[in-house]
Length: 621
Image 1 (cartoon, rainbow, N blue to C red):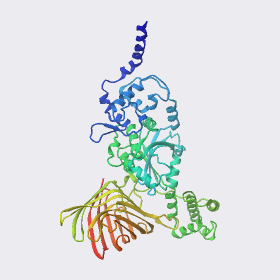
Image 2 (cartoon, rainbow, N blue to C red):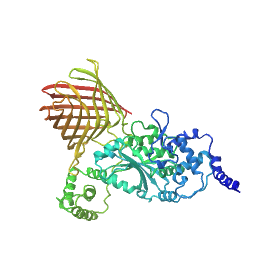
Image 3 (tube, rainbow, N blue to C red):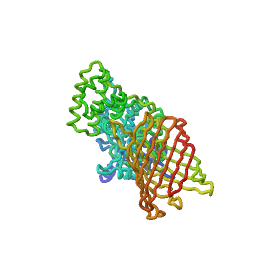
Image 4 (tube, rainbow, N blue to C red):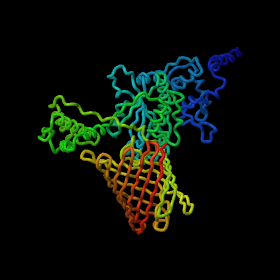
């Protein structure tokens, strides 16, 4: 009897584990190296190539204690867990439906039926037939959005033309930042991985409200050509990672990077993540998706600001002035000056003014007691005009954001500084300056990270670091009678500065604010009040500070870009002196891949004049 009692549990254990042992492949080492399995586990090869580490930072993402560093251990643990009988949301098949689907197909497994109520309810709620990659254009006023942002829209079956995609759900990945963190703290933590990244699901209309209506960002929608099984596998993996932390890094493991991983899971072999090197710029990742033939169609959704600006710009100058007078309360919508227009012209003025007032009340918080009555008056006057066409929507830009130049730039040039000849090499990982080919980028916007300029002087065979730009941002947004944005700039890094005796590399911090105005269609003038701070032992007090001004003009088109102007600074901390400079820089664009550049500077510093010129070639890749 005692023998049978001891034998019974052993036989029961053999019965329960027999199916597992029968269906477990003998060589899991080969299967664990499959690119699809590595993608499901977010495994990356270690720096020295000796092993793997998963980018998932949540222990609950793994079924093996050694799963973060061993794809094989995680594979064996997953195979054992999904073949165990059981039920409920805690079962491995319910926690990891994408792994289950892949292993079932790969190994032709016969798995026990498991009921997963939470996952089934989630997929039924999403009701997804197709997936659309959405790119929100860059927004310089927020560090988290300076490069743009991407997310996925989960489109339900298109049963008819009336299906409202605004109600579709979206999947996005972003830093889980504290609400009270400042923009500077967010930028610092985002760069160095101080935030966990979270995957969220929310309705598309909420995204439009945030990006298009509030942040003035156009949206580009790229419908992916995924099959239904591929869509189902993508959603299954989204379920697997939805509650698990992945450290967020602003440059690489960001919103766009995680979406590439989802697409790689959905369609193994696309290898989108292999395109990522030092950084994953959202516009670059969209370009990779397009280049991999994953896009079935593209749709442009202009922001509220773009629509309002276009409606106003299409008015003749005198009617723009009339619309501004009505919007600001100087004229009534039914004033004689408005009624003197033809019905079509009056309708256009009233429509444009109404859209502008509504926009200002939403985005700029115009007082309701002013905006609401004025909106009602505008609608009342508009209702009196019959058979007038509705305002035309803004046309789609000729060049999409993903069709602009690549963001990595390498430059080689030759020049002269005060009769010293030099050759200069410049490397800039990201992203764009105002002289780069403007197509696909915001006009007047500049954003550079980690730019390095190295010079080799031929007179004494000396190699010098000329400057290292940590961050440099400039936003030249034109003002007019309807919109009054602030033009601003900020930057920090290290640069060569003249102490009066020698040129030394000093850390610096600079900023400025002012205004910009259009002269015609492609030229704008700007006036910026600036402030500079330099810190170095070679300076008299170890630091120096200078208020100043930068006055100039900027011209941008797809063939040639030019910026020219005059700067002045009054150094007031270490040694009281002025530094005056006139400058001109231009780029001749040879398509989207190359630009020929030339620049000239004439400077009066420490009561001596010296000139610097340089010419060379930019290459974008």
